[in-house]
Image (cartoon, rainbow, N blue to C red; front, top):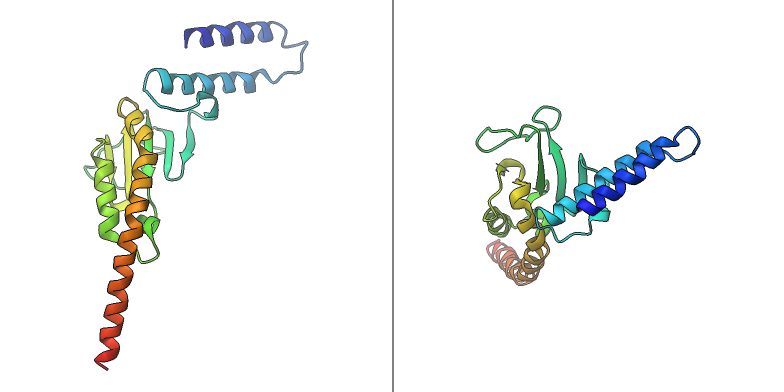
Amino acid sequence: MENTKKAYKEILKALNKYKEDIVFDISDLERKAKNHLFGVELVEKYGFEIDPKIIHSTDWQELMDNMYIGFWDGERRNISWSDDGSQPKNETLLCLKYPTGAYIFGEDYPAEFFQKFFLELKTYEPKYTDSNNNSLYFSLDNAGKIYNAYKGILKRYYEENKEDLKKRKIKQMKDELAKLENV
């Protein structure tokens, strides 16, 4: 990271020296350098298995479906319904959000199946939890672990859901058949 920081510092120093004579948007380049350095920090300091060049914001960015990294000041951006009432104050957090809850696994809203998935995600020790809104917030010190494991966890649950969905459909059809037979 130190070489990357040094490179940006030297490049930006040279550009700023000649900013009256050039057409580059130096503030945009500075912002891009800051974002890239944040990406490098995610890799080197926090263990994220990520291409640091994909980071385009230190304020808010979707990393994959239902996963975001962002800055919570506790006022402008806060946790809607924190389980313990606590709020982050000037923290960058990794957030897993499931606004539609169990619909992630099917139109029949398999609540028990979703809870099993959500409870496994909680084993990665989020700093803040908003169970009412199906959201988990991880400090950067802990976020690399869940980021790196997430795709595998999600894939495993999607595979497991294929069988579970069959069982739910069979039960639903049997219940409908029983209703028809009792009419």
